[in-house]
Length: 254
Image (cartoon, rainbow, N blue to C red; front, side, top):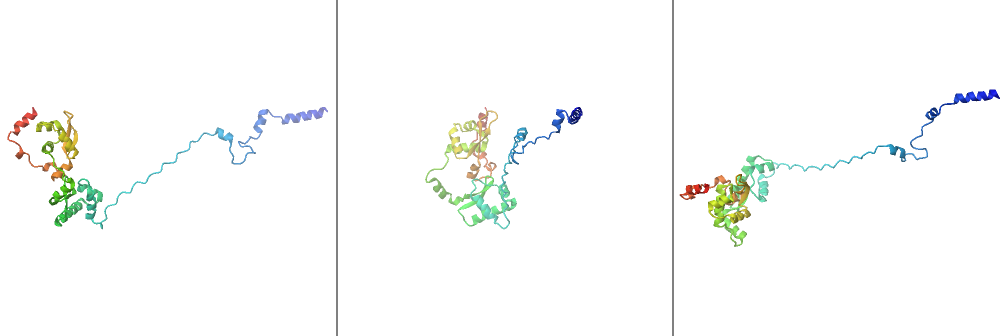
């Protein structure tokens, strides 16, 4: 009895280990229990997982418009220039036309001159002229009175004497302020300036550094109307000035 008890005790002591050792030897439990389907949601792993911010998809890149191709050599440059100038609202320079069509400037200038000569030789009712620094179609002067009758329908389109005087002052003294114009003419010119602005013959061009008054100058339309390429081509003013102009200038400066 005693021997059997001692042997069992010895065997029990030999197989006994500390609880911590038994826990280490025990198989670890899987994160996902065996009774959960494969591929299911692992709540334990989801609780420990760091939230991942989804990356926003890149914005689609818009295709840039293709650059216009130059005018091919087999296309009539004269016809292309006619089509462009037909819808132009202001004179177009040779530099601009050359850059748009990607043709040499000399070739553009030569073609424009040839077209102008052809229209004149054929006696066309329109003319292609270089004015205000560029080229544009105009009504031929021989038929201007008929065009004026059509446009005005009997109404007078002429400027008044006061408007012409004011326009002349702006043309020769630009940039100039209203006060300066009124001093030269001897009368208030506010109403006349508004008329010239409405007709597009003068425009604002900054302020006077001393008085901060608005400065005015003539426009491209003014050059078109009088048939000049630049204000430097205006006729000399001296023959039209009175003999006592020196006294007038001195009075203005006082």
